[in-house]
Image (tube, rainbow, N blue to C red; front, side):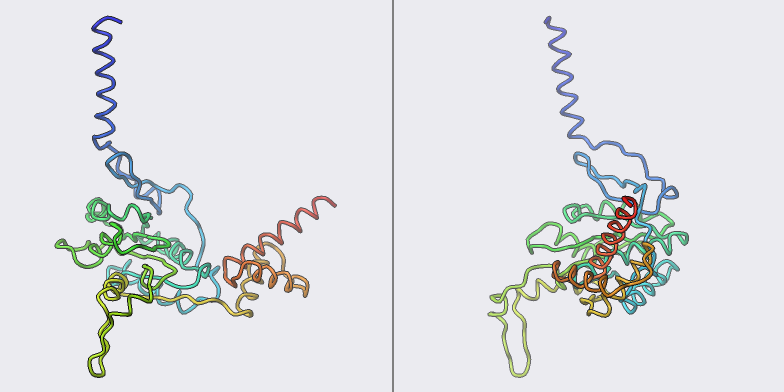
Length: 291
């Protein structure tokens, strides 16, 4: 290899290194071609990526959470219409429809200009960059953060607090944050946190550790709680999904199997009901095909 070839090889390696360091140029997303998007990172930069096949769930398929649907639907309608609305924290039992409700609201209001951008927990540090990319858009955006839980020293925890309430910059009025969590305060709570709680007269003054842990959740203007379903609610949801899969009669054997399915999973939830109905429908279809 002569000196010129060596120089070219070194230049190629240098260019490869520079390309990894410099932010890549990503095209602006086509906001009319999709209704759901994800925030993605490539190297040191981030971009908004369209979701080509979003979940098409509708509100009427979500059973047993009528009051939760009503409250969040009202908030979302206000937001889409350009009126004041709150950031929303959906907390509670797993599998009860928290994430599905947000997706269903997107489908309901997409024709009115609602768009959703899913942001993973480890990308929450980019929230300010995301806001910069959308604040002049005419659409209304929900930043969707699913299944959040933090340690109090995580960067994403602090970034979310600042964006919700605390930055020197005004939050864009075309954006809300909808987050789901199995924990009300999204951080672990320990008995030792209560040891520094003080009682002054009839007043209780929580410790600084507790104050810090509730400081994130209290920045959401609307809290909506989801609870485990009782047996009758669970069976109603099973019946709904069985009908969806073409099974319109729930026999005594099917009822027993549905309850056993829930016991094995330690949960009576909409997700478990759907999984049971899907399994039963598949078994019956397979048996019918063999015969």
